[in-house]
Structure formats: C-alpha cells, structure tokens
Length: 214
Image (cartoon, rainbow, N blue to C red; front, side, top):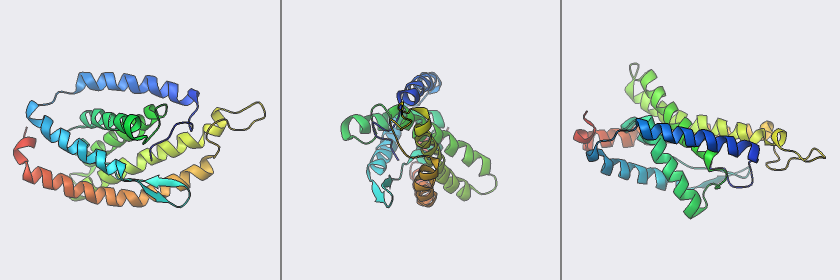
C-alpha cells in the first residue's frame, strides 16, 4: 500500500510534507515514554517493520501487506505509534525502496497518522461493548481507512496535474479504478490484520503485564 515515487504531483506531496512535519513536531512535544518501555516499543516496531516488508501482489497490479500499526497504537498510544511507524516508513523508503521518497509524506499521513489514530479511537469506542471486537476492529480500520485515503489521493491525480493537452502528468487512473482496486482487497486484509492485532496485543499484555501497567 506504500505509494512509490512518480505517482504524486508536487501539488500533492509538498503540502503533505508541510503537514507531516508539523504533526511530527507536535508528536515530539506530546510523547513522554517511560525508559522501561523503550525496549518493548523497539521490539513491537520491529514486528511492524517486518510485517510491512512482506508484500503480497494481487490481481490488478496492486499489493497488500499487514502493518502492525494498531498493535503499537493500542499498546502505547497513537502519538507514539505515529512516530514509530513514521520512522519505519522512512527506513523502508531509504533502504529498501518500499515507498517513494517524494511519496513519504503521504505514506506517513495515511499509514502512520490515520492508521494509528483510527485504531486507537476505534478501540476506545467499542471496548465497553466487547474488548475482543474492539481490538479486532481497531486492526481492521487501521488498514482500511489508510487504503481509502491512498486510493482517493491517487484517484484525483489526473485532476490535479495535467499537460496542456489534458493528459495526466503523474498517476493516470481515476477514482473509478483506484477505489475498488485498492480498497476492496484491504477490506479482506483488514480481517487478518484485526485477528493478528488481537493475538499479538493480548499475548504481549499477558506475557509482559508489568511493562504495560501504569
């Protein structure tokens, strides 16, 4: 689901870079992490890193992958998850070519920001109804909402930047292509993400209970 280089116009990624930088500065001010929790955060971030590198190609020319975003958001908080996933995405873009450098701000806003905050608030919205459902739904929404955002941003590129003849200068396909080809596979992948999120979160909370006690 990472956007590669060459798909986004400067009219898209430059404002995204400004917004992303502002959010990172805000996160830096908000995040206060116990020293004792840093090893756990590093380990869970590494899990997310590996999950995102396992790319599964699907028909239509797109790919899907698990993320681990909701795991970080639920075990810590959305600002910590946002900063952690932002770093993961940066390393993947610079060292592994997974996601473009110019597209990094959009990847950060979609996966790191939307994914983290949607998971966190979805969990707290439903946890009184059913904690199990809340965790699974948090994992599901952390994949689906970013996919909708990315599909929308890509789908409007033919309208954002065109040549004098009216041809798209960057990504050539509209919303009628991007929404079904990107979002539909992630609706199914989100179920797997939710189940993985539930398993990992409950295991870590049980196995390392003291680390997560306030």
